Image (cartoon, rainbow over all chains, first blue to last red; front, top):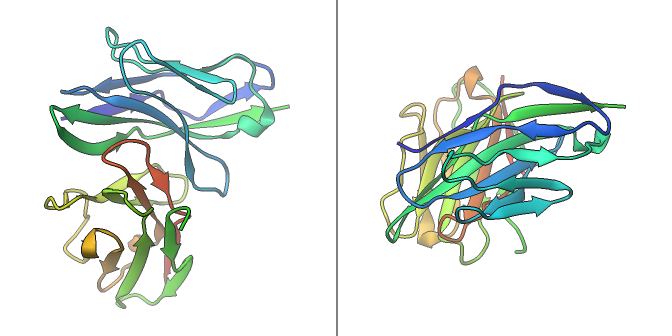
Length: 115
Length: 112
């Protein structure tokens, strides 16, 4: 079945460091890919998405490119800030012909950015 | 409403009691999900409703858990004979088909 794998956390970085959170997936159809973020004490919200191969999603300085050849959707940011400290979830939504399957979430990666 | 709403926001109950958690999805959204998130943990999928199709109940942890969605809109998650390990934040999300999910604020359940 479909699945999402993320790098283990927690990840601790200094402010202005480069961030990569790896995400790989397994899907049988034509998935859309998502990154969700959960800030401390808050609910989950969509950070960015990509709906087809080679699409790049971007938001708030974060980027992720849908790589079908490597089945990956790695999250990157060039210079992290303390306010980026949160838990990040990679997710996919598969589609086989006209049938939509439920969204699958990865386990989440906790990021702490220190001044 | 503008977003997904859940009620109550907090629920404290005694072990062995039944609880009902409510979710009001965004109007017109065909898909509705329930998740459970324990402290510091990831999302545990519970149940998925998609339009008029039979729900995917594969994530329900035991037969004490059940959910229904009336009229393709409001959903209720029921936990019977609550146990302390049921304590968690219960999240509801809705989406149009299986695109971007919109999450509610959650219900924090504490079983004493």
